[in-house]
Length: 439
Image 1 (cartoon, rainbow, N blue to C red):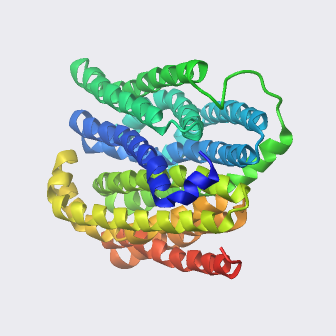
Image 2: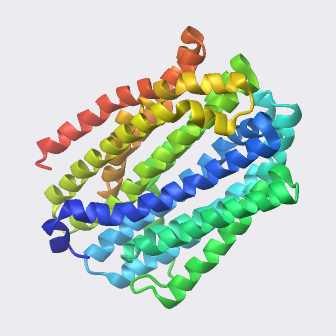
């Protein structure tokens, strides 16, 4: 891959790199959806609620992993674009090791935080039991997930996005089969669903390691010289993604706090099921972001700033189209969708009522996210962090606490679209500054 090849047909290159990433990310999200489906079948609405109460933990891992990985892959891409293959390889090795160490440290710390978290949320009984059983095992699985994701970004940098898609297909299929086997056939319930995720992730990791041993052309496993400069630069460059995911985790905690206090387990279960659609769409957006980011970094590093900006504009168009398509499809199938997960008629009613309102956020969220990816890929952490912090923390938290107090459960559904619309104004301001610089 070179700049001339990208310039010849940027739209084709974006899709070529993004489609495989999107498939991989969507399939990855199906693991969560499948877990929710089987949890609903074998543990009921309380099990679904328990998984959702722990999502801030998952976002902590995602945030740390993305901060290390996206920061590292951006540096590696720009280094490679500058002609330094060995330097890029050193960044790759350091990035993967750092991702593994950071995620393992998070697991050690989180093992001591379960009881305080459950106490603040007011969870007890079945919900508390399912939470502890499921997430004790997930503390082992989530570091493996982070490392797999980090490897995946560099596999795309190798120009082999289809390989990581195959790994993801294996992970999803194996996870679904093991979900049914462990939870259904063996009767392990919530523990079986978590164990299925762990086994699937380990098998996938094994296949990835074989790729880097036998087939990788640019990045290879081996010793590296740890660089504090690369470490700090990568962390700062990926800080917006960390802020974004952590903001989402904090927002999810706030959602759970407000919903549990005002609407109980039924409200949390309904929000969880609607949230699966948002999660899948966010993976589509992340897939576009991960596919476009190496192209942006390479072009920007080669001095082709206008081409990098063109890639951003085209990608924004793609995610807007995707958001519109998901909105229209889910608006039609919302009644069936709720019944596939929830047993309670009250929960199904909440899902049907809230789906369309909540999904209005898709018209704005993709553009906000891709623009944040763009600024990260070009080494400008500040505007990326402001966008992420606004949509994931400041504006969203204000909406979470204010709107349900004014409009009840409808206010819960309104929080996301109102937040994304406000953040869109901030994003537009940064993009006007881009145009002022000729990008």
